Amino acid sequence: MIVYHGSTEIIKNPDVVHSKKYLDFGRGFYITTFENQAKKWAVRKGMRQEKAAI
Image (cartoon, rainbow, N blue to C red; front, side, top):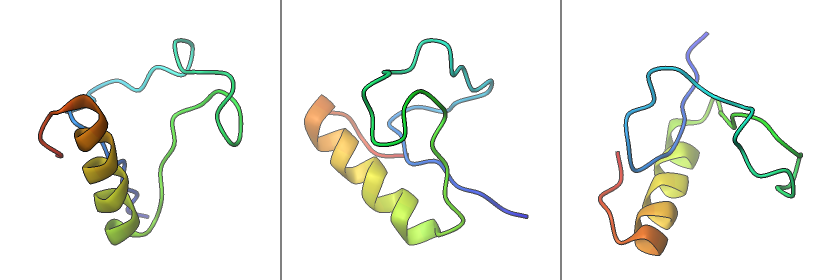
């Protein structure tokens, strides 16, 4: 199974301990099976952080 994570940095080791607990589904490392959805997440996060999406 291929999964995707939209971000502004490369994540080598996902860390769920330091994630925000008030997200939609609580703490965790959010992934999707939809590549386009991950790309949208990365672009949105990049705009907020003024960084490039990966």
